Length: 135
Image 1 (cartoon, helix red, strand yellow):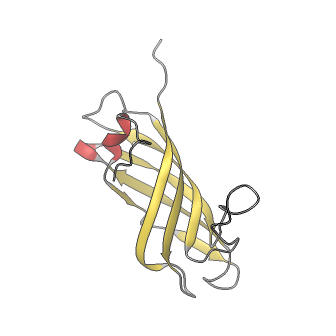
Image 2: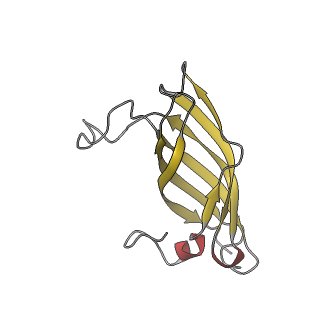
Image 3: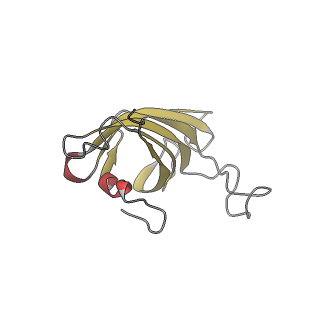
């Protein structure tokens, strides 16, 4: 879903679905403690645009707190995954974006449990589209 005023015109082509079929998480004891996650993703956007790549980050973590921000998260925020995704755009219909890189930070919230996240998933993704210059 688009988010104005943050999204650029090019980002509109990314409106769609982000799927991580093989997400692996390693926890310190159980799903209620800190963990590390990684997986390959496929992001299907508008009119046949696809981004494929890898994401990785930390699970059950909160970084939006003092001293850098107002205190809106705890350091061990349950059900929160924060990390980075990097991928390459493949598109037959958006020639100017074909081959460009997508690098983004994500914040995902799910309902926490002792075996990991479950239930509703809500997320924000903010990043950049990087294309090489043509000489």
